Structure formats: C-alpha cells, structure tokens
Amino acid sequence: MANAKSRYVNPSRVMLGECTRKEIRQALQSGNLKAAIIPIGATEQHNEHLSLDLDIVLSTFISQQAALQLYPQVTVAPPCPVGYSPYHMARKGTLTLRKETLRAYIFDVAESLKTHGIRTILVVNGHGGNHGLLRDVLPAWRQDLGITLDEDSYWMGLTDEDRETILQGYRDLKAGKLDTVARQTALNHASEDETSVMLAACPQRVRAFTMEEYDAAGLDYAHNLSPEVEAYLEPFSKEGWPQGGPNPENPRDRARQENALLASAEKGEALISIHAQFIADKLQQMIDATEKGHPYPAPK
Image (cartoon, rainbow, N blue to C red; front, side):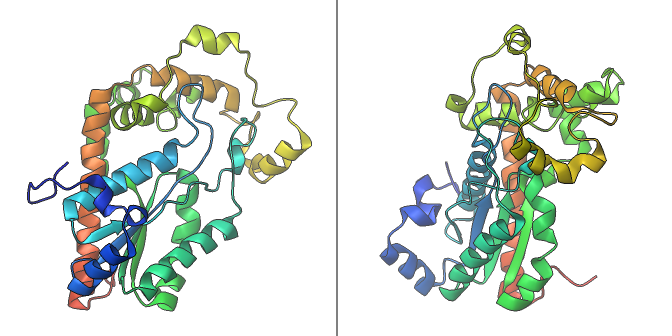
C-alpha cells in the first residue's frame, strides 16, 4: 500500500489503536496529524455466506485505505462494531444497539479526539441502518464540539453508472430482467456488491455456498418468531415487515443469496478504489476547511 506520494506506508501506522502514545503525541505536536476517522458498522446477518462482522470490517478497511492516501494527516480510531440492526434480529447472531447507545459511543469518541487536539473528524459508516440516526444529530454535535464533523456511508460515492458498469445485477435491473420485487430490491445487502468487496478485501470471511444448500435449509424469517424477536420487529410492522406488504422477507432473503453468486474479487477491487477515493476526497475537503477556518459543510 502506498500513500498519495507513492511511498510505502505500513498500514498499521494509520490505525490509532496500533500506535503508541509517543507516536500520537509527536504526530500532533508536529502538526502532521490533522484529522481522524471513526469507522462504524454492524454485527449482523449477511445471509449464509458472509461473516457477521462484514459491515464493520469493510468500513474499517475503507477508512484505512483512505487514511493511507492522506498519510500522515489522518488516523483511524477504533471502530464501533455493533450498530442499529433490530430488523435483522430474526437471524441468529445479529446484535443491535439502541439508537441512543450508538450515538453516545460516537459522541464520546469524537469528544476524546477533540480533547487531544484533533479538529476534523469523519464518521465512516458501513451499515445502512446507522446513517439516518446520525445525520439527525450532526448539527447539534457540531455546535457542542466546535469542530469540523461529518458522517457518510462509504458507498455514497458510487454513481448509477459505476454500479451498472461493475455489477451485473444493476445492469439486469436497468434492462428489466429482474422479474420479482424481491430480486429488484436485493442488490445491496449480502449480495453481489458486498460479497465482491469482501472477496477482494477479506476473502477468508466469505464461505462457499449453493442455492441447493440454501433451499435445503428451509429458512423462514417471517413466521413462528419468538416474542422477543417480534418485539424488535414491531416498530417496522407498518411497512409490512416481515411477512406482509409487497416485498415479504423470505423471498428477498433468497434473492440476495442468488444475486451473490454474481460476485467476484475483481468487481470488489473496482468498488474499493471508488469507495476509498470518495472518503479520502471528502476528508481532505474537511481538513482544508478546518485549516482555512471555513464552516463545514459550507452554508447553502
């Protein structure tokens, strides 16, 4: 791995938890260290073939890649491995936090970093369920902390053209080849997209599978759920979750598994390049705003 100046940098050098206090102190005193990334994600089900920690593994990996591009300006804080995932609690292994717990963790880490003199912080999210609940509190946090602060999901830099160029599922969607609502809405969780990125970044966390094995398992995530699981799902019942409405959960779960068969490491490498560049570019803009004393984001 190389930084923007094409000089090799050991990947551990940008990870806060792998540095010593002396190394961080000297980086701050020199003025080289200007910003931090806080990766957040989830520990939740990703169908039959992907590890439960995918969201936090990938947000941390993308954060590290972006920090290496900006070395020595950026450090990556320890990630928050569990997110807001109540709607997946019917699947064994999923963990979830309350909204206020997740918010409190991120605010406390950001405040710690600010105390040490870091004035620019980007929260890099790897789980869709976290995004909205953080965007809602950012204006208040910026005022309370008095720093340049933002949050974004690493995939937000992908354009429709990127998706259609790289991913077969999106080309099929555009061409009208996906014949069910389940298949049309199964393109971004545990499917071709995330499986490809995981194959490129952490192939040891991907398991082989077949649709025959999937069907033989007789999985049912819509019926005979425990009262505890029902309590997690109840807030989403107005959307027809998990068995009613136009897009019940069991067909979509199977469609995700089917779509994942299209994944490849080559597709993942192309996606990672876009993700890391998006985060690096955004963070550099934030650093520049801090250095110039400009508000971020700029007033509309």
